[in-house]
Amino acid sequence: MRFANKTCIVTGGGSGIGKATCLQMAAEGGRVVVADLDLGSAQATAGAIAAAGGTAIAVQADVGNSSAVQAVVAEAVAKYGAIDVVVNDAALMKFGPIADIAEADFFATLTVNLGSVFFFSKYGVAHMGPGSAFVNVSSVHAYATSPNVVAYASSKGAIEAFTRGFALEMQPRNIRVNAVAPGSVDTPMLWNNPNVKSGVEKLEGPIGKPEDLSSAICFLASDDARFITGATLLVDGGRLAKLP
Image (cartoon, rainbow, N blue to C red):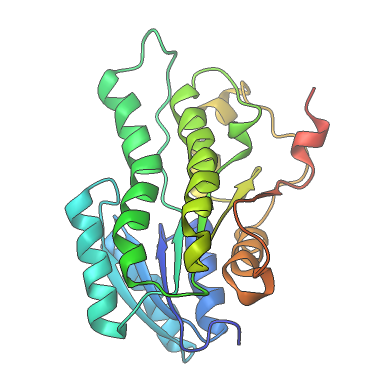
């Protein structure tokens, strides 16, 4: 029970990788705060956890909004007293060539994907003690991307730089900061990706399951990874190794 008596905030917890992470952390004893823009999805995840005998609350959150993030943090602390784990999984993808993409779409992608990591780090860390952990969800797009998805790729590359720098800041407090970089994972985001639908983005290698990522996230969030910080773990089924 690696998360017994630990409070774990997971963004994007209503579906995909975030949902799988919520379920696994709860199964391992965690008190899970399921944060999602879609409150119904968050409640469904929390309900599944409760039905299995676990502990969870659902919170509606626009993670690209500072006030909304502060409200999630405040609710978690009010309910459970402290925060032990933050998993930043929520993400947005906007598509289009740089010459054509709307400025609002470009900056919305950065705000949701990177801004949320900043907000939860800034406001969550005040309530986290030694041994706590952040896990940020990056992407193989930080390394090898495709046309028309520059905003998303840029945000993921920035998340990894943020992870390295924040990890150094947190070392004196014994708070770890790491990231995972998924490849192709069987989630709505993958199958709704217009680049995938059109064939612009080739799905190289096997398609992972959300549970493949939740296992890696839970490892990095747990004491099993107590000597790992500032790192990004590729969980891509060998996709990058196959790319030219």
